[in-house]
Length: 89
Image (cartoon, rainbow, N blue to C red):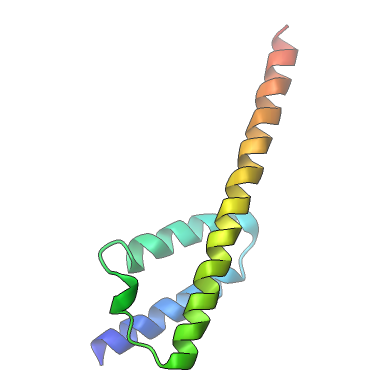
C-alpha cells in the first residue's frame, strides 16, 4: 500500500506540474524527477493500467516539453550574447 500511495502521489504531482507556466514547469519537472526517479526506477511505480498510461503520457509529453524548452532557452541565450557583444563594441 505504501508503494501505491507513493505512486499516486507522484502521478498527482506530475499532473500538477504539467499545468504550470513554462519556466516554473521546467524547474518543477527537475524537482519531480529528483524526488520520484532519483533513487527509483519507472518500474517501481505501482499503478493501475489507466493511471500508468496517464503517467506514461505525461512523462513523454514533458520530455518533449523539456527538449523544446532547452532549445528555446539556448536560442535566447545566443541572442542575449549577440546583443551584449554588439553593445560592448
